[in-house]
Amino acid sequence: CSGTQFDPNITNEFVNMLLEEHSFDQNINDRSNISNASVVKYEDISVSMVHSVPYCRYTLDENDRIIATDSSFEKMMGYNILNTRLYQIDLIPKEDRQEYTFKVMSTIDKDNIVFLEHRIQKGDGNVINVYCMGRKYYDSAVRKERIEVIVVDINDTHSVKMIAEEIN
Image (cartoon, helix red, strand yellow):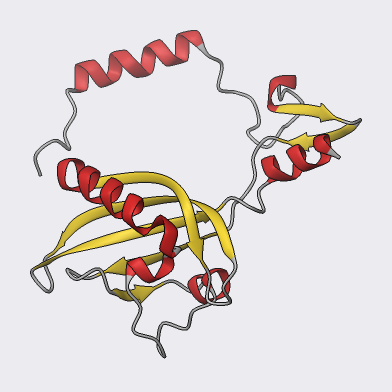
């Protein structure tokens, strides 16, 4: 395969450079040397700076109909994809649809990828704020373009909780 081979001289030189500059004899499970920069004190409680976020993933066909979802979709969005013919635009609150459509179409046609912060209307009618990434790709199995979408619910993140605590 093209691009998978390395020049042995350059690779050897790189490895030697790493070995000279850094000592790799530390136990990787020894956390006693973790710098204070990776953990902060927040109201006298140590808080990790790395957190999982609630997300789901789904796939759109050429008509922007949701044709596949992951196991988190129904729980996060409140829609059962097997019982509903759902389109991407159905997830967007009516008052946001025009701006949302414009931003997605003007970006994804140029770059094949789009990142947005926007709102989604869940199946129960509640509206949540999300970060969303959509990526256009060619599905060779069906010989059609598809869009993979990953949605992150930002309402229940660690950062939002910290801001809420500071406000109160």
